[in-house]
Length: 70
Image (cartoon, rainbow, N blue to C red):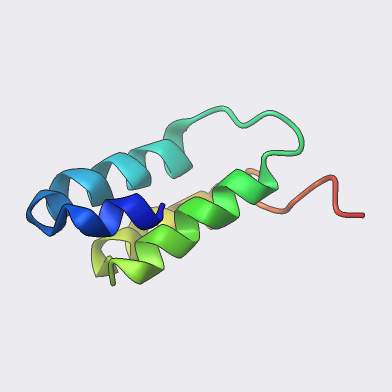
């Protein structure tokens, strides 16, 4: 995700893609690390536009936890 910082002019596209990925993808079990990484990237981009879609995801009841935590 660090590479995304190299493209600030593409921020809108990057953030939209990250939001789409974290909210619409059918996550397989043990995908918690990837979701955490995507959420961290959204935070790094200060993506306030991600707040509502992420809240909707939480409200949907879909698991967003890391199911395979050791």
